[in-house]
Image 1: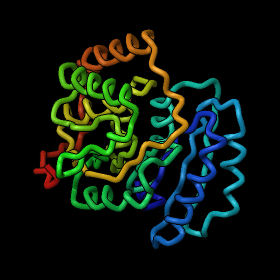
Image 2: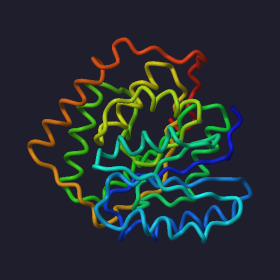
Image 3: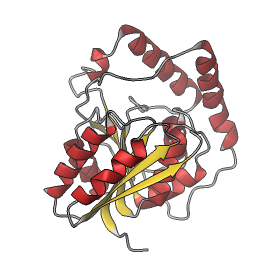
Length: 260
């Protein structure tokens, strides 16, 4: 099927009436200057505020070659569910998903698209730079510690060789997005790891691309003992849930990643 757009940008959003409008304005300004047709998909994940209404207000501001869609449902199902819904609905040749607070400038999408155009199936943002510095150094100490513990668990239980599985700035070809998100089960924030597990199992070509990132204030993430147990449970479940998962028909061979 011929894609309707060159690029689809998927934004999962839950109670983002404060941060989403500015994000949409920046994305619209970026796409207005680009020559290719694109779509922006806001997935309102059961918000209880004006997230969907404020997104819809931006429809009149879209340039002629850009379309804005808002997908809404209730109740809240989790970020993984929102990304899955948006990626499966995408009609672009390439599909990018990003966080509603846009911690990575939208202009960085050019770096990811460059790798997809070279034949990679996924191009994922990496907050660790070539010189070894980590953009996450600006996070609070407890977030950095939790991130390191999570990475150790991911390496042991699911995905190896990916330096930054949780960066919320990833690009996929439409074919990869359809295959991976169709097979995805997890609805919480471990979904990134699940997608990468499947991509590695199916020998998809993955480029890890250093990107600019900043710690945007206002995060609602609060880690509790119950959440930690749920995360560990989800990680352990990935291999079991996909023990019989079969790759799509089109095979892919591994390419050398020039960023590593």
